[in-house]
Image (cartoon, rainbow, N blue to C red; front, side, top):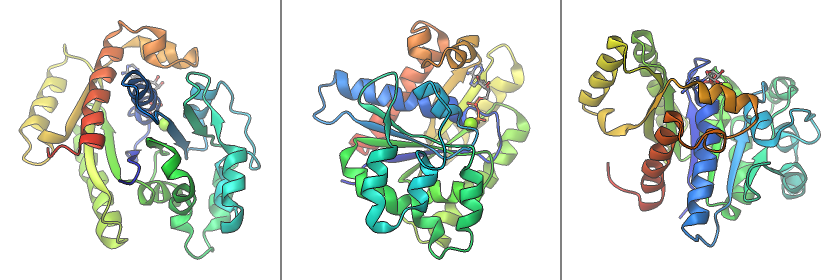
Length: 276
Ligand SMILES: Nc1ncnc2c1ncn2[C@@H]1O[C@H](COP(=O)(O)OP(=O)(O)O)[C@@H](O)[C@H]1O
Ligand SMILES: [Mg+2]
């Protein structure tokens, strides 16, 4: 079985991609450890030059083009293994949770790659070298469908869309779904499946939020993919500021509980290959 590789995607910013990436990755790693898995290792790949996932999970964002994803994408095939072993760092949360850090120079690297044949497959090719070392990989993407995001989608087996519970978000949802299908059909990456939809910053007191959840639930295809409803909860912002996962910041917070539920759902989806 190929290592499940989840990409968090939505071309809009501020919809919880990074928050979901780090808390999903941490939750998967912790759950695999608690279950006594022989290999509980999980890898976060940060493809966003803002490096928020990197900062939160490693405590630093001082990575350069030499010790970040930039180096991995720029490496010759025969150097890839050596570059990966140099670039991958352990998170400061769990020794089994690793990170390929982003760097502010990722956009320059991306521009350089535009004219390189096979550029969109660079991340997939690099990850194929180390995939077997990990139980799961989680990829954070930037808020655009740039070449970098296409690389993330082409390296993934499972796409998870995060969105806020507003009307316009659901309109935008269709364009994200179209992009996933374009990658799957147009780019011949049939292994990519749309595996989940996560609603973040949900406020049960807002009628429009409840209506949006209800219409997602009723949706013939998306209803069964609704894998998490994460409440708006200030513990998330405080956790980010303290460079902690939300579970470590406050395991009893509503967001922690909702992310833990989502992790349970994803474990089944990724490892039991449950038909949903
Ligand atoms: N459930 C939540 N409750 C409250 N704030 C949240 C929640 N999820 C995310 N945030 C905050 O919203 C902002 C954007 O979240 P982020 O995960 O960075 O989105 P994206 O990666 O899609 O741009 C961050 O400041 C984050 O702390
Ligand atoms: Mg982000």
